[in-house]
Amino acid sequence: MDTKISVLEVAAPTSNGNLGCPAKTNNACCIQSSNAPLNSGEATLGRHLARRLVEVGVSDVFSVPGDFNLTLLDHLIAEPGLNLVGCCNELNAGYAADGYARVRGVGACVVTFTVGGLSVLNAIAGAYSENLPLICIVGGPNSNDYGTNRVLHHTIGLPDFSQELRCFQTVTCFQAVVNNLEDAHELIDTAISTALKESKPVYISIGCNLAAIPHATFSRDPVPFSLAPKASNQMGLEAAVEAAAEFLNKAVKPVMVGGPKLRVANASQAFVELADASGYALAVMPSGKGLVPEHHPHFIGTYWGAVSTAFCAEIVESADAYVFAGPIFNDYSSVGYSLLLKKEKALIVQPDRVVIGNGPTFGCILMKDFLQALAKRVKKNTTAYENYHRIFVPEGHPLKSVPKEPLRVNVLFEHIQKMLSNETAVIAETGDSWFNCQKLKLPQGCGYEFQMQYGSIGWSVGATLGYAQAATDKRVIACIGDGSFQVTAQDVSTMLRCGQNSIIFLINNGGYTIEVEIHDGPYNVIKNWNYTGLVDAIHNGEGKCWTTKVFCEEDLIEAIETATEDKKDCLCFIEVIAHKDDTSKELLEWGSRVSAANSRPPNPQ
Image 1 (tube, rainbow, N blue to C red):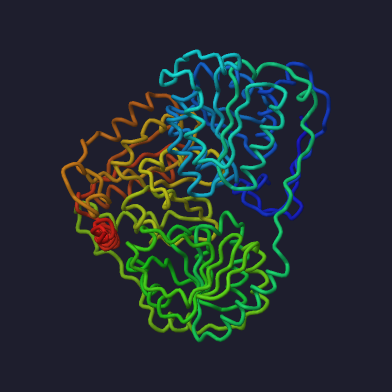
Image 2 (cartoon, rainbow, N blue to C red; image 1 turned 45 degrees about the vertical axis):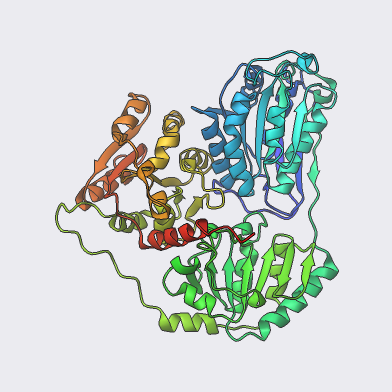
């Protein structure tokens, strides 16, 4: 099938150079195909779904087989341009689709009915929280069984087949249950287009007896469909820009802070345009790291309240006006609700809304349009950055290790910093890696991902699999704690099957360190594994894999040299032995504040 994708306003290419259909843009996305007649073997529901996935930019689908989806998988495999990646469990398949969507703009996974669907549900909820368009496809019951009062396997023993659907309704923006061929075409197209427009996951259930059946609606290549572009209310946009310009131009030392919703608004470039035009000091929220260029001349670091990078919080919180673009202020990002910000000083720009201080709110305004228009109206003001430049003192370096001294985590990340380039991407697992990776200075073009809003431990293993599968031009460096790795370790196997060459730093400090700093107890201590031995067993002589344990800086230097030179084509697993109390100072501060927020007594009744 000759399929081409074009975008009315040209979208940025994905990291591998392919122009996908960007799920997080406000541009119209037109999908073009030859509309040629198909033979009966291709004119099936399964092949129609496969063609649609390829058209929107999905070339890899993460799956776990089950009896309800086997025929569907046959038809997905048969589609040129679509690769089926078999995962060890449904949770990791969902996490992999999440990581894939962060690169390609859309991801997809296929599981079986209920036992698979409820297993992948946690990953879908995480993608929902992170505003990622993810297409979750479930092989459902035979269409003849609906309404028959029959009890099926893979259910909870009731003749009601809607339990899975009801669970997905709260974590997807559209649900399609396909149990007849007449409306299958419409339901599938609506689901996929809704995922792209809303930048949220969708749920598609396909009856297990329908995937292989030809139907007239699938007899030709899919007729191109177009995603209508979102547009700002022009009068509202002009009013918002005028009010915002007045608000900012009277400020003495305004600053800008980028947040995680820059991604869904496709507004990172517009944010930089405003920074260039205004001269404001430029910071990023922790969950927005990677969306704001850290090589920008006015970049001052990560704003994270009491655990911000050096001198950043002082500049942001002392400003008399701050522009927050796409922020999420939750208990984690606010360090237990302890940010020293004042609402009357804030200009909050969300993907479709602008709020200025305690004053006016403007709806139906796209962030990208607003930031670009505001860039033409603000006066140059470099005061905040000049203040930062005056007070800034370069960060120190970790104490030099004595020969064979047990490796410290700050020394580990000093060496990881040297590995970063435009050909690498960092995946940071929930835990102390959040804080250590935040301090990494990202070179231009270096990818960075973590899951701050949902914070599901174990996410990084599947996400590394999916990200590496999508970003073939980058080498992924994953920083994973031992507790998190124990949750999802199996899909290192899938990385090997796919021939990936990621570098995994497994930080073995004997427990759930982030939980220890919030509230300690014996439940935070885990059984120690021989992690390199486990990966060697998974490797089992098939694929390219290299593992090592490091105990000191000398070991680490040798391991990194081997991983980046002789073993650069291998999956490299480096187990770092660290002391159980070796944590970042930021985690110590953050943990105590989050603990205080969690332990607030009930309000008086």
